[in-house]
Length: 363
Image (tube, rainbow, N blue to C red; front, side, top):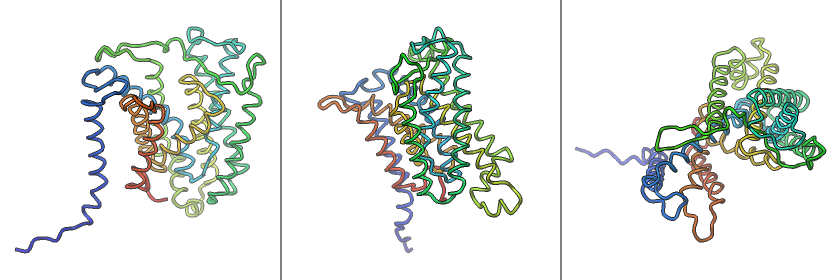
């Protein structure tokens, strides 16, 4: 009986899955049983530290998703290269700060969470999202509507807008005369959630504010999915991306729906900025940092896919936090460089085996 010929094509197709499973298995063994000379040591000896790192990763993923989903909506679905996304986030964070200062009579002084009610956090976030949605709509109508399909021109235009917005923030924010222009600012979480809650697992107590941030990310994801897949506007957006000429020939106004989508994407960037202002504070370098994060998340997950953005956010959050906690810190202490190195290693790995991202498809 003749033996079947060895098929190298099957091996090549299965190689990415095998490499991914092997790398995941090695990472689990390292974290759970070995992890020498790291901040926490092996997870079996310190399960509470492992759980805290895991929670930090997932809650960070919630914030990443809020910001990156707006970028994915604009870049992934509409194919608009919006390099001003980070500046929208930064301006949204400063607007939320100014609104909270005004509502609490802060006068440029630190406002403690005990002085902040739920509405004194929610209203600034809504105002910031609405203001940046209007700004995004103006940018789309004035500059980008006429350059659809011209990626390089769009990139140059939005880079210029990003520089202008960032410079104006440095020149004019914060608005208080008692605070130096261009200073880093923080908004405060509401006092009702700025506390620890007992999870009743390994004796871990965790920040309710961070859990609320995760819940907000989940809510944004559900709302986006319902909008894009269960409403007429969302269906027009997806149809217009696939074949704009045919969609327009059917009498559907693609330009209006694209303008709405751009405004929503800009609003999500501002909402992420308002959340990040409470999570870690915003400063004039935040825009470039979060534009880069959004690019990595969207490219890893796949352009135009909500599930891809979820996957990219989770992978980014896990790699970012676990590389800090479970890689060696002795010798030349490069712990702070680990997240950068391993995040781009993740990006390179995904692009090597899945050029369109985990859930992506060809444009």
